[in-house]
Length: 290
Length: 283
Image (tube, rainbow over all chains, first blue to last red; front, top):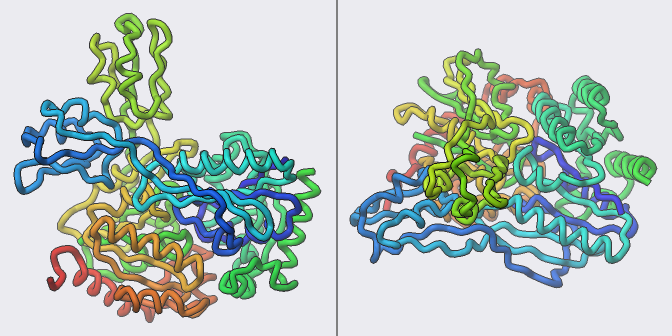
């Protein structure tokens, strides 16, 4: 079983559209949506949810106003600027700012701070028209997206191994931080999909460094390459010089958005220029990762 | 006014809009690039960087002589950043959230803190815009401390535009919280609509007033517009798809370079945002 993670650095370059297209092309595959903040793969794969699981991670400090003496020690100890004085002489912890470290809980002389487990979201095991899928929804303003990513990946991997799948295809998050690191560590390869813009190049460079840091082989493909052919050239050269392998150039094609609006993968909607190139890229991946 | 430019989905045009708003605004204005994982504002503004500072976070160091292996620090740490083995304690700095709890609970004073570098903040100017950007070092997981370091440069008396990271989790929340008003940038596609709804829920959860800007507004369907109507969310601007804009963007040119006629409408966005901001709404 080969695990391929589709990432981008920069957001909005086509990770999910490409992952969904690969899902349609892959035989015997399991899918994971690790962009748990803004998961979109289910909009195309239309999974039937079979199991739903609550995800708890970390804790959250909550002041009981009735027991708060207003001494303010919690605020002095908090390094996350999460505690403010209320008008009525007690203190309040902003859930959006609370890191869940427990320092205020420990040092409150009145023992007035509760520290319950934090419900951070849900994860799902589903069936789609292309195969099993594991996905998640992070709670609004929730922490610990990296840990939820790890759960989604582990569960998808378990299923892939059990059904002796040939592929585990992972739709990754944007950026280079904690959820991306949780998505790529230990994977067989990453495919970076980027666009031929200065921003795309800048962000490709950073995500390439990240993959190298974790010693993961990198494939590269350019989306909407014809917006700026010269920049496409420069990004491919940069990638090649740093050990990444360019696999193809997807042209700008209105069929990609049209497919998304129809709830389909672009390769399900015919043989336009983008669909054709994505088939080529998938063929090359299958040859390179046998 | 602190104006956060945010979105659920990435690549919808947050940076494009942030830079264009800063260039169209009356001076003084500050642009803060809080997308510290992939900061791109500098590409379009090309500022002269005048000051650089490293962002450090404090992490524990153990004095092995003084450590008794009592496990109080490791049982206190919520992030498993400390492990006691016999009479020794090991630190895993990459897991540490720098809360300082371990130093405070250690009964023998065996824990002090040292600085760990995780990123940088740069300050500069371009076209009369004060520019501050954060940049997380590659390989580091936690962006919120770098975002907080960028936000320490906010001047409360100056119009401040915060270019925020995508998503709805800690980095986005760290960037938008305590802003006065937010603009959510989206595109008229199923992905754009789905992630807009998540961002809207986040804004409502935070109690932050907001409006929407629809980018590439004619390149998809009508569902974003209908959703905003149903939810009574003001659409502050629609930017039609334009290959000239896309090509200019690819070369690092700003939206105003490619479409200078947008300037008055960008100024209208700033006016509308200031009317929406906290404490300024009709009750």
